[in-house]
Image 1 (cartoon, one colour):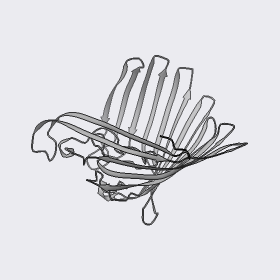
Image 2 (cartoon, rainbow, N blue to C red):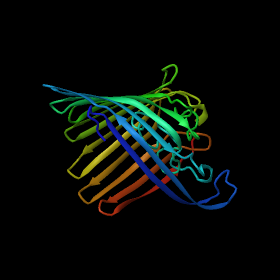
Image 3 (cartoon, helix red, strand yellow):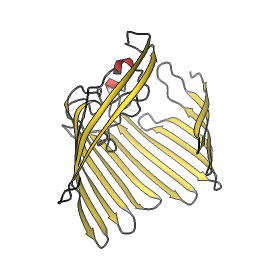
Image 4 (tube, helix red, strand yellow):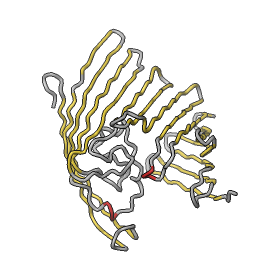
Length: 308
């Protein structure tokens, strides 16, 4: 619904259903379990865009608010949580109806998301956009654990800047700030560009310690990835991930890719240097392919190497 002053009110609702067959789930009283889980969600989004048109382009400032209601998350302890373990709360997920990635966990309870978006567009096609806001848990069970930024009734602040001055180049920055002190808990900065046949991207990440997740130390790393188009269909891939604080490589990769209108295939080799308890360094070779009209698959092999 659009009001006479330009306000927008958008109601939404959905019903999600999952059927599970699980075995040997930690904490579950049953060795084998079969059950169905339903999670209805309904809410409303309010926004009021203010638009300023100028000779050189346009500016848009949009305050936004959401209120979302779901039952408390049910049967979470009866499911092997394989794809929803890491929660990355940032500007991209601020207004998501479900802030969990994957399908094993679902956000429950009554919550509100508040924030704004500011966007500047130039007539030449370049633009810059900034988003900032936070989330509030109003009622029901909070689905999120410690050190996620969402574990209390009021979340940390999240913000993001995207700058695309012209085609072939972009700069992005995302930050999560402590809700009380504004101390930086997470910061990401990425630069991406293309020149002729060469594409490259660099990502800098700084993370505060997360003891509740088994990460007792601050982390700081940089990751770079490159691709070079040898021909129209063939490209060479390379990447490296580096631990700045420990001055040591974390991961290296190299591969080749083929892509046309019907088929995509990538053969890659990955060397992981990370060690943790009994996890050794390993070298992995993988092949993935996609028939674009049918689907895809992948196969890989890992060779663990003893490290003295």
